Length: 495
Image 1 (tube, rainbow, N blue to C red):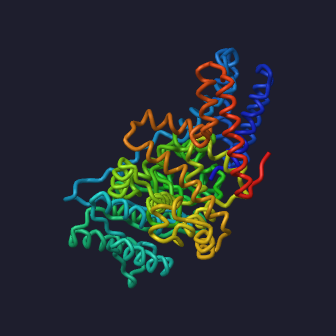
Image 2: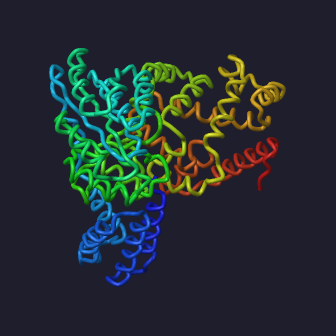
Image 3: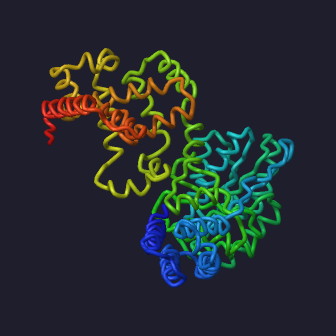
């Protein structure tokens, strides 16, 4: 998602940072690269023009040019402009009380993901304690009625349809009466679409709108269509007065043009984004978080929220208690990896962590998903005793047996055991510590200090400003020689 735009903007900022001293001239050259990146991402030309006018006025000013770090100031200007162009957003669906019927009307072109999104919205409402009823108003395609019924069965959400009817207005009227009969408090109308905007489609939607008098009219847009998505959004808004937009397929190769353009062109906010085919893959749209993703700064808040929803909290508490007792086995490791896999593909999860998105681009040859599967396969090939005490129990013969069962090489088993041993020490050390102490340990891990006693000794001496004594130097040299011999025994070589 937004990879091309992200790469283009990163290149523009890199050019600015590479200047010895920023002037109005080279600042404008850098901003031209920003403009080109936006146009290549299929952002609407009027939007690009307005966007560039804003950031140019703010970037080519004395306050930025004379600041200590003008290139960072420009990034800040672009970041704020992205937020302003995509927001603000009201995520509320303006639901009435449970004794009244709230009507949500879904509209959009054929193939935009309207029916699936109706199901995703129904799931969200049910999870929030509401009683939704989905209505099959798309009478153009019989398959759309079948699809909505299948989704309803999967979610245990009722679906109303009438295959004998040819008029969606009559279906809407009957659905309103049925909703009161079964006690539903939210009506989701899945209306018909066309391959393109035409007069017949708009007239039909206007008639349904007059009958249903919806509390919210939501337009579903396929973000892959780029500039066309913005044009169709404007046409739908002129006919129906939209209340919000739901962008779908943002997990694909969306260039980002629709997300950046639709709010500015129509004035209608993006309320939700579809980030996958599964019925739980619907998220609230946050302009600030999306701006962070576009600029390669990650989206840690969305990742944390997803973890809170997906992780088994009871299991997490149980693991925390075991860690406090100094217990951390490969079974615990296996369960933690299983929890992480619930967040989605590893590549996507890593992209939400600040700084990791750009790193992953340089690791295209590394298949993170495949690596995790191999690792879990090794653990699953172990006995209960081997999982509890891998470093003590697993000898050369057992290593060969585990490798054979997992379909890997013996040295991979050995590597996993060594990594687990280091990780176990860290996990048990973190148990019971506060956030500040845990963050300190994470920073130490990033410098390699905790996994290398010699490195830790050096870092501590360097941070204190003291030189190593001859005895400490000799001890450090001995530790390095010992590590080198160990690496050679493991067949890794070294210098």
